[in-house]
Image 1 (cartoon, helix red, strand yellow):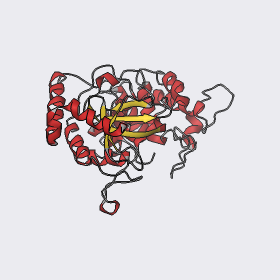
Image 2 (spheres, one colour; image 1 turned 120 degrees about the vertical axis):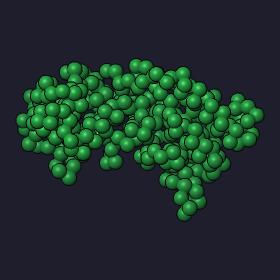
Image 3 (tube, rainbow, N blue to C red; image 1 turned 180 degrees about the horizontal axis):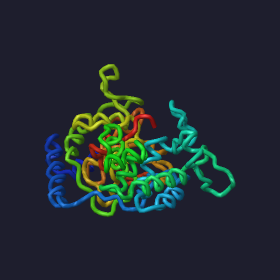
Image 4 (cartoon, rainbow, N blue to C red; image 1 turned 90 degrees about the horizontal axis):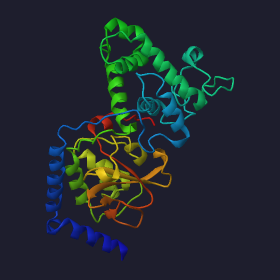
Length: 339
């Protein structure tokens, strides 16, 4: 009974055009682009704070403290690097033998690892040493390239990837595709970890993603469902959001907690149609996110809720509401594929 009431309520809220199917989407299109016009001069800005829950609670204080070690670094930038390197996994080892949450190679650790927690040991596996060491290494590189033309943070990241000598010799980010892509990825990903200091630009792809999700209303849920023919066109929650954004040319990761990092995070009162909305039993850690839907306005989302249910409208204002992401093309492209 509660489910059908929710659906009826959102149809009423949407107005008579909702009954016309695509008329509802057109209302959303108009709403999104009216807002876009109002915010045409808005920018997404990083600031030096961290977005709610973007950094796991166990590491938030370390990232906030050490991310302010030098002007070229910020907590969000440091968080972006750590997420890119390890996905916050303190035990991971790469094929190149890079180790721990900051992915130091042992030879680099030997010269740049520091005793971050003052316990008399420099432990490559201990985030209390590895995170401060990553910040210290970044700031050391920033000193090497401080007189190089261009953005000092970009040059610092380029030095991290290609070496300070190449940055100095090139008088900026060198013309190496791997290095240029690394700098762009980290700076884009930085926006996902930063607490926005201004309004966030609306998404131009929002209406298309909503149109796809709306076309799937009533489809039965399937755990692990990607909507393929062999699955009867069924989805789970993140399979639905992934497929919706693929129709507008944006490739998202498969799981909800990585989709959270596909762009900046509007506050609840700044939600716009097309934003992804997330839910978790741990409101301090984005890695614990367990559910995602697509916001459609009026306090409602389209989501694939659970086994035995169908894709439907559900309210977003529940105790497990975690936050939202305004998906950007650059943000999605920046996401690592190995976390």
